[in-house]
Image (tube, rainbow, N blue to C red; front, side):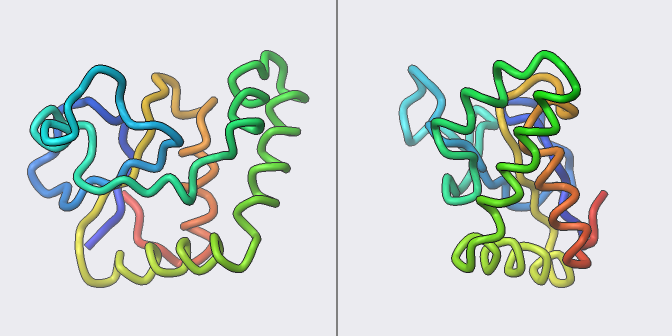
Length: 128
């Protein structure tokens, strides 16, 4: 069993399991009933997406220094008890089922999902 980190809207892998959208907003122009069939996500979990303010900082980060500042702030957001417990739950679920988490960003290395990958690994999640 594993957690896959994916780009939402891409084709699903055969063994991917439940796809969780860790994004602040649902996909634009897509009816809610079509989120899963269009490979966006099965379940929306905006609780572990960056806040709107922080998302703007991450999207504007052009230098390594600016990106590192985003990562530091996002890690601080994810350290709150409520969000930390969600990450603990996702990590624990990786022992029992396949699931995937994702975002819309094209480049995972400049996306909060790269930080989610690290945070889940730190909690012992089984990652693909």
